[in-house]
Image (cartoon, rainbow, N blue to C red; front, side):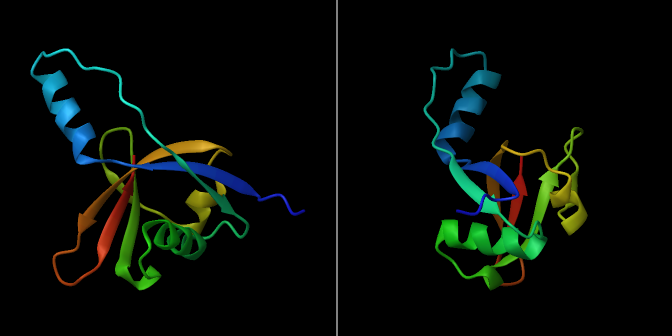
Length: 112
C-alpha cells in the first residue's frame, strides 16, 4: 500500500455558509453548522495533479478549471504553483469557493 505524499481536506463553500456569515455580520446568533470535508491525496505535488483531483471531486473535466488560487492572509488571491503545493502542510484544511470565469464555461477555484 502506497502512502500519499500529501493529504489535504477540502469542503465546498455553500450558499448556506454565506447566508450564515451574513447573519453573523448583522449581529444575529449563528447556530453551529455541519461541514463535510473530502480528503484529497496527492502523490506528485503538482498544480496539474491538484486540478485533476478537484475536477474529479466536482465531476467536471480538468479543462473546466482555469485557475486555482489560495487566499492569502490579507485576502489576496495567489496563483497556485507546484512549489506552493510542495510547501503545504500535510492534512491542511481548505474551504473551496468557486467563481465562474467571465469568458467561457470554466471556473476559478479559491482555497480559503
